[in-house]
Image (tube, rainbow, N blue to C red):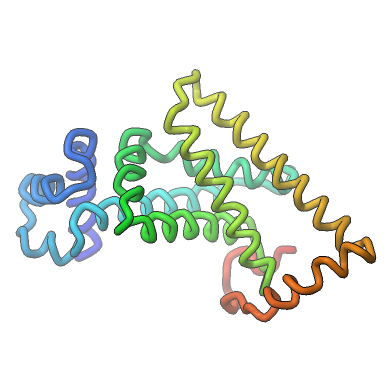
Length: 223
């Protein structure tokens, strides 16, 4: 019942965000419109607008996961699977609602929330693609994808091209750039001098442990 009420308030809020942003005013108007007590609305979204924005972001992530689960991406190269996942995520979002969210999360007090939301999206994309990496790779994959996703979102927000064609080209360039870096890292590992240069940083980072993946995680059996 609580989840249903939360969804109702969020749905009602969406029409107000383009005018009033992710704000207290939007939360109050949404609660009033769907007949939810103001105190309950506050309990569901304790920080008001920022929690509304995070709920909208989480909804988009969940919808992306569902769509990716229904796709057969096995014929695609891995870099194309990543591009498909990011494109799917953005196609589920409303440009103006995300623009308002980016304004909110640019404020110092909410910057951490925004970064955490982007990291969460990157983590869900890797999970949906069957990633089972641990230790250093778990972090570097998500950090790299967070950077690609964040840059693509910013480009997309200013993109007025037909069907956001320019954004998808930008995304491809960003992924190609990452793949070049990965090739460089691989060559460094194969080169004796490169191994020596990387030994220190890698030793430190390998002490970090990624969260243990549950055995029943979707895609766990994949390589």
